[in-house]
Length: 262
Ligand SMILES: C[S@@+](CC[C@H](N)C(=O)[O-])C[C@H]1O[C@@H](n2cnc3c(N)ncnc32)[C@H](O)[C@@H]1O
Image (cartoon, rainbow, N blue to C red; front, side, top):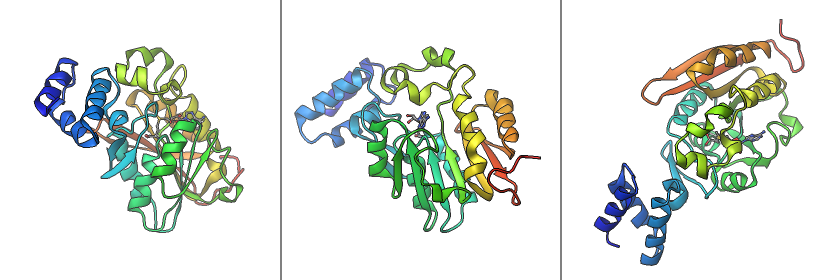
């Protein structure tokens, strides 16, 4: 297939950005046979990033394998907020790191940041280990982190699954069929994982440290209540063009691990 045939094939399959996607597919393929196979995968509904093997994120190329959550453009806003709060040499932890886009972008922007990331899905961990210039641990939320990080994390990021279970069926087929359910499903109100992250954050944050979580406007009141219940002072930031909302919770400068919130 030449490029115009690829564009026609992608357009017929419903790809909105057929020209751009054709160009990316043709440049990613090493042989004509591979190009044909990639075009068919894409026309069959596989996310473009999983076909070409990478996603653009904060100016970086993030390796993304088939079956791994594709980093979203809106999450660049979370990174921007984290970078504003981080200082050179800070310890940064990214939970639910997926392919590791957030940790990779923070490491690229913050001088000498010591980045640690955790993720439960082995396929995503394999990608994250290619992308994050830091330690990537496999396991449930905080469980695999080294104990020496307790009370020392300056910036804690977590783009957790936050789609309510009953709304998964309304997601675009690319997400529904080609991203793991555990990457999307946040439980009945979408906040199950967020609540667990917020509850344990004070054990890991340094005094004055920050937890940043992407959420939706609709979930904000309950998400903020979860932050407050764990002793974090919540603040909302949002960016309309990216349709991005990030909740930032700050641990009071005098707080210590294990201390009950007032
Ligand atoms: C919405 S995706 C976000 C991935 C990545 N942070 C990003 O923004 O591209 C959520 C990720 O959380 C992971 N995850 C879900 N539950 C987890 C848990 N209990 N512990 C660690 N990771 C978890 C999923 O496997 C998935 O990769």
